[in-house]
Image (cartoon, rainbow, N blue to C red; front, top):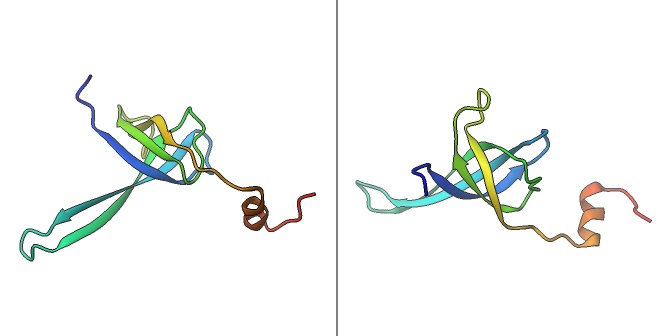
Length: 96
């Protein structure tokens, strides 16, 4: 296994071709106040696996692909399952 950083996050945007936005959340203890703090960061990742919004993915660090993409989707850990009724509500149209 190589020494590249690997992160696990959720796909939040998949509208552009072969690029997804992955939100990675982390918790840590504040150094002065000792309160548990939750923070999240969004990474742009190159996607050859066709991940969709809501999927839990693993991303791995790579050489810069573009000005904002420095990560690649390594694997889809858990795919988001959608019901037929949910798709109708999201699109707002009548599917027959």
